[in-house]
Length: 523
Image (cartoon, rainbow, N blue to C red):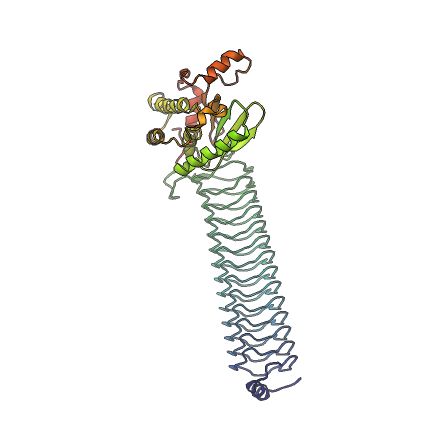
């Protein structure tokens, strides 16, 4: 149906709102107020709608290719399935608009407001979205190949399964954005802010993430082969099982990053910041790394040079773990009591961390406490043994070990290492004073499980193990049954532990610990 501007505006002013399938090709409706109008299926190609008010309008399946909509007001408008190819929407307000399955190929949308808009399955290939506002927009399955999104704001936007191959997102803001399983090959994210973004399973091959902010982001199972991550911030990021083959991580901030299982083969890590970053479960064949920054502030105050022969050892670590083996099975009642005890300890001393991993069999119960760094090993061991009858003996051995380290073979440890051991000893002394008045589970020693012999072992980040304490009855199941019963039931029996000299095993354990900043205790 053909209609000119005057007739349309006259009928609209008279109260009519439905104008479906209208032909206004090359018409001029600039600055017109057409709030809530129904132009679904209409032909508006090459039409001038500059500055028009189309808030709440129905433009679904309309032909708007090469239309001029700069500065137009399209709040909550329905543009589902519309053809806006090569249209001009610069500075247009499309907040909360429905653009699902619309064709926006080559569209000019500079500084356009698309906040909370529905852009599912939309085609924005080659579109100009510089400085566009896309906060909380839904771009699920959208096509954004070669789109220009420089300095665009996509905070908390959803881009799952979208395709952005070759897109330009220089200095774009994607804080908290959902980019799961998104196609991002060869995207330019230079200096982009992806803080807290979810990039699980995303294809980021050959992307430019130089100086990008990826702190607290989730990159688990993502593909970053050949990516440029030089000077990028990946602190606290989840990089579990991520492919970083031949990636450039020169000077990248990887402090406290969780990257267990990451594939770093052929990558470059020279100058990477690795404070409090556990280096275990990594594939590091063929990596290049001349030095790393182990300083807590990432200020190069603690630089560790590395030669090619050291790399496999430096990047081959294990999870620091406190392991308590109880020489009896875990009954249901003991299980409940143990959970209650550790809950109360953790409430008082959060350093205990999470509940232990349990390994059970008919003869023994193994409690494993994985920790994030060697700094926590002695503290967690001190707290984890508290519910058991062996706690005092274990505490004594721990104190004696630290005292021995400070008094013997000091020539084999650095001054800084000895200073840190002294600080740790002081901390444990304060902890001992606090424990004296902490007895919320005094009933536990009456249970067989908590008075059973125990063995406490520590494993540091360098895979060195140390038996901190082992009860003299641990494992003695073939001895005289009546004698064992007497010994185990005699709560007054105090058998002094064997002497604990600073043997080579203990010294090696202390030397290979990495306290406060992933720095070895060796000189």
